[in-house]
Image 1 (tube, helix red, strand yellow):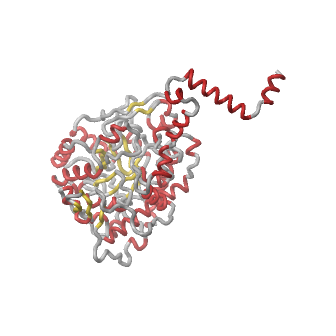
Image 2 (cartoon, helix red, strand yellow; image 1 turned 30 degrees about the vertical axis):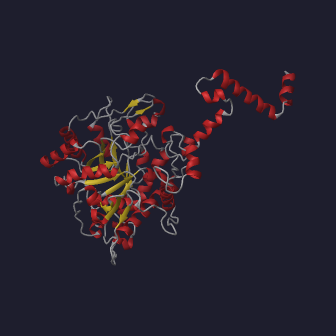
Image 3 (tube, helix red, strand yellow; image 1 turned 135 degrees about the horizontal axis):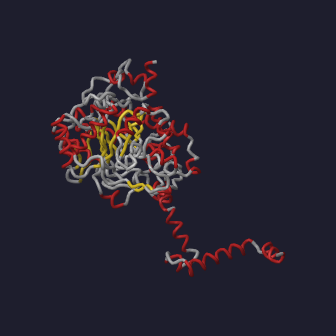
Length: 524
């Protein structure tokens, strides 16, 4: 024994390194069969896999230029980070964007812009920018709701995002008078820390799920009664990342906490079907919407990524005939989002937001239904100029997902699906999410929303309007192609947005249905 210990103690450190490398080489050549490169080039072949693994980071920080990356380039990310931190988000020496590029947006400014008068709500609060419409007003729901912010947090589930990330988002929307969409993972304790909530469910019916995996109205009623923070309910038909495809939540990821929230069994794989079991036709779908609204008193809406239009036309025809149907429609873009998906779905299934939204809005406009609906846009719209375009096309609110994630620390590592998110936002690792300071990150989400609304208002005023709902298709111009050059949205998408009833911002300020718990201070 002493001889062995003497040998170990007398072996220099570099010899141990050589021994370790020798063992790795033996393993590469004689035992592993999966990787040709490491077999043919033992030891140094591992360098290739390591470099490949850090490729996205290397391109992000050292290779790609400011406007080159997707889904969000460095300029876009920098604007969100600076806005969230209340830092200088300006740029100098003119734009470095190619303003002649395809789909570049131009907002037409007025010769004399809108001048905010004395006593106007925006004099007191330059961030005040609520939705111009009341969700559920037309259908006379018992509890109508006017979102107090035109920008809100889109559907992202607890389980997909970490507990601290969800809590940061919820506290942030509470501080900025916005709402927080739960995503289809159910209502967690982290969704109940200060913000208004839109409860969202999909084909898995998590949170309102029977033992057999079907929709339970009884659980829905209990959930709404016990949680007054829920202001509306959204039924997901499909999402931009993977429309028409269900998901599998591996049993290994189902902790007791997630199992309780989602209403599933611990450690057992859970399948979200591609389609709903609660309805099989458009009439049955409308009946479900009306039943949920009747039982809960809340506005009920739907979310979908757009492909074929025949069933949307059937829905619009039925709404026209019966006077029933959803109170709001969220249109998601095929640009994808936080949901992990096969490239074949993420890249090719469903239309991009501008094509999908314009197609659906036109259907409801032709039937005179736009006034009774609140349209919500979701698809990389978390920038004031893009939001101006969306409002000109008919949107009443926008939801943001990845932009909200970036405001609380996401670095676009694009490994959300691996549970190894380095910023702790999209992981269940206690260690990784331990770096999220909830009070600080919630402040940053709130500041991003406030900065967005302030700059959006400034663009609106420059165009001569008091509220962005007044934008028309003729106020926005886009580059089309080399032959057609540039044209108004009306010419590009072949419709004109219906005028939104709007008196003034004071009327919105005084509205009894105005959401935002923080905003209730105005009456105290």
